[in-house]
Length: 257
Ligand code: FPP
Figure 1 (cartoon, rainbow, N blue to C red):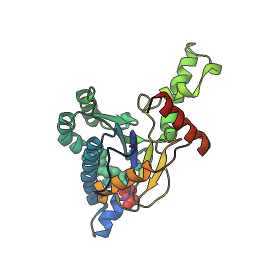
Figure 2: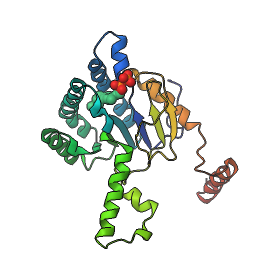
Figure 3: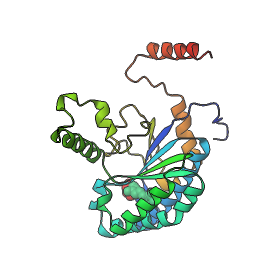
């Protein structure tokens, strides 16, 4: 993909990725599934570097779903150790490269030690501006919407809000990624075509891109292919194609281009 000019194409501001295929990648090599998760961590590093270098503003990676606790205990334990080790090893590098790290999900499900490490990493990198890296861990889209609804319900109960006054915007403001633009592009590796309870609300108008490549093999070229595909899509947000084209012309006229 050397021929893509990233200066010229329309880049997504926010890319979300379902990193699927670690287990199969390992099994294809006759290894335990956990070997695939370790290789997956290397692919995470590559994807973060690529996103930062290309000027993507936010990258959200689905690392551990609310449902993943049901996996064999040994696999869960390896994944927790991996998050802990990777946080320890990579946070300084992320900070050096001006990356803001956020962990989204129900953090209370993690050990005290891991929660502490997460808080430290978030605080250290809070003011960074090159890229926001959101790691979704113990995250589920339904959990996110439910916790947002609970916060609005509490405000109603406290007499600060009337239930009739609730708007979509108010609910959106209580979701995990409230202060970031919604993902423009969702990439799922590993050949499956489903959303698996990821950012259910936030993906309402995202473009979906499915790659057969297994996550540990997702390299810069594969990422570039997804971006190039996105740049050719027409995003209509419920409008007709003609309306979208007219809106683009109107913007060009008003901005003097
Ligand atoms: C899905 O593959 C992957 C996961 C459930 C874990 C993702 C974890 C990593 C990429 C490693 C570390 C990440 C960070 C952020 C430190 P799968 O196991 O469902 O694969 P399969 O579909 O082939 O079984």
